[in-house]
Length: 141
Image 1 (cartoon, one colour):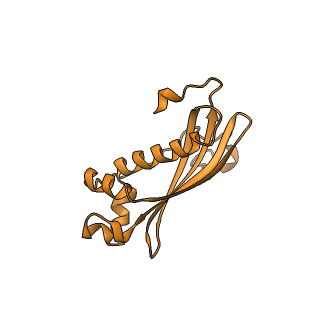
Image 2: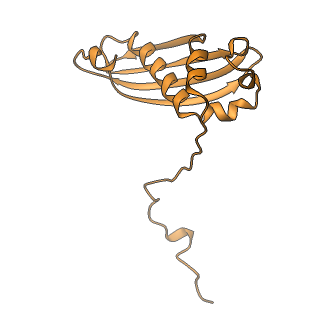
């Protein structure tokens, strides 16, 4: 019997990189920006040593949606893949995090999750960031 490959027992280490394929959809920027102007934003978090941990919840109410098509729950697929919405909610989360820190944030990592509820479209941003050792708030504003 011949061997077809090294087999699972002979693997020494895992490949150090991974590939992720993402599709982007785009909503009209002016509509997204207008809807974010009416967003309900709730944040919590704290600075612990040289790091910040927290989350920001951004709810876009269906009743304040600038276009009827955005009130459809199926629009969530488009909205969660919209790069402009992602950038705008990340800026909101960064501002909220920096308001709770003694200094500016240096490197920020964020996980975004999207959902809907009867009131609106919800984006939850979990933030993990390093706090800068010097006060550089003017750089990020």
